[in-house]
Image (cartoon, rainbow, N blue to C red; front, side):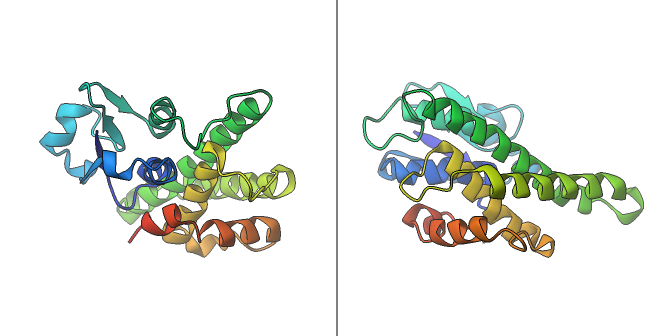
Length: 199
């Protein structure tokens, strides 16, 4: 299998974490690309020029991080990132969707801030920062932050929080969220998290 990724992408990091957690690291060739440059190797596989993109052994291509993790889930009988039974499966996928939105809002802030100052939409950035704050507070209040579990929802959360630290540290997301901060401190010690840190 081949995974097209970018070191700083929180979307690709989710997949890279899952690969490590599933013990599939030796079965995957990691190909680092800059999707903004629209490299031919990537666009030939994914015309959207987005990462991550996974090329399976049979040549088929899977894109979008959560879809890729579901595909990887079907390839291994070991540690499963997606619970097989209800209601755990439904709750896990609900956490996935919320954390994907958290990552999306964080990414929008980063991309908008890269525009020339005269073209930036300050109100749009402010709105995304409110989305981030509300989402984190909801997670703090409602999520079962269980160290015995590290499923697809937890992978999304860990990747999202790591991206906030990397690109939006000024938001000081830990303030007023001690449960979340403590959970992430422990999650960061996982080998999969250490191996995939953005730099």
